[in-house]
Length: 155
Length: 160
Image (cartoon, rainbow over all chains, first blue to last red; front, side):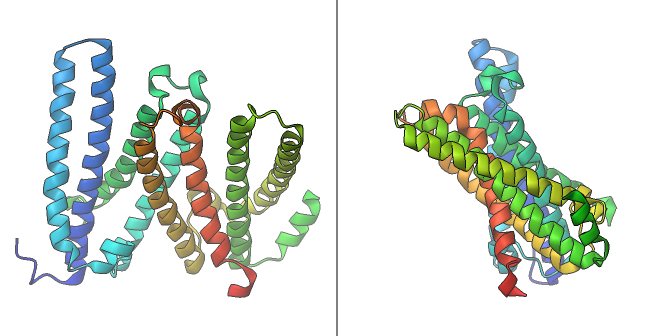
């Protein structure tokens, strides 16, 4: 894709969207990995396990591909890449709003996890698993609203 | 006490009320996370047989709880004035809106860093038993502290 002819808002739009994709894929990667581990401790080999393994690999490929496109765009929108400040007011607003959503849902999940075995299944309560839940919720709740707001017929 | 704060907030303009609300909310969040951190540290130290240390921790925790309740009352007394800020985090004053959202950004990023660091630490057999119980707490207090502390810094008195 030729990005030399694009204006700053157009590049920022592209960047924000691709970045949201990266975030969603990271979230999916951690989530599917967690489910894969949980499934494989319950049963040794099932279709479910293979399915989640495939989704995990798919999201890893997604992370790599989109990271490359994001890093290509990053040179054009340095401020957005390093500090998360967009020149275009609307994208700046959307970006910060997505952070707010991420903050609130992560806070909620962490608060629920704090109550321990009363509210959360025991198998999720190890450090590794609870971190995977928190990380995936964090990234998904940042990325999914952004993708929803930036969808094509919403312009 | 509540009556006084109501009287005091009645004559405020919206930006003034939002300023106060944001500041008190930041303080509330910071004290909440301090409370949780203290509980976790207390649990960690409970194996140590030192009465003075425990009493010290109890006194500080008690102080924090009283502070928490006091600030909760102050925040809720303002909430009726700034409904959209209280429920949706949208401030009418542009500057406070900007600061609030910037603080969200800081805390989101800090929480990511903290969770990846913890993930690396979780292989360490020394920390694991304590960490298992307190992972969520650490993430929660990182979120709260990195939201509240920058806000308190930006809204300090000499920075107007």
